[in-house]
Image (cartoon, rainbow, N blue to C red):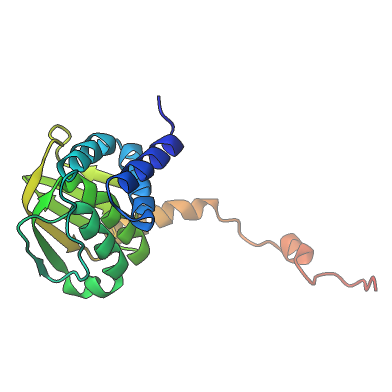
Length: 201
């Protein structure tokens, strides 16, 4: 079994050989490492995509808008641009990408943006949903079909940070935790900081 370090290094070198700059190739290496760490087929999708663009390198993307359209969008250049601009994009709340090749490859870039922004990000395409959790995990509703060569539409939604529990549930749990509190007795007060009648200086 290949280590994550080997996956990172080989993905980076293969991407450079396919025409990406060293800087972008570095990001690709980290991205594929993340996909494999989260149990998603990064190597498989990268292989397929690099073979697809062997004779014609994709166009770079300089700016991400609320709606991003092209005949075909590169998931890597789209992901890198999204990551670079994520702090400005958050105010848009929802972003659309159309005609994205091998969309699995865009996920780790948006996952990293989730960590930078400190919020969860929901991605939807081809009846699949992916929840980015601060670059710590990726939850999906579809664990079967990751062989997607083109997503007609990708929806990226910035989610508000909310507790998964109610105020009542929190108060109940806090009340239980209070059983561990120790009441301050006179003897504890005497042993506290600054207590005592003797000056040892």
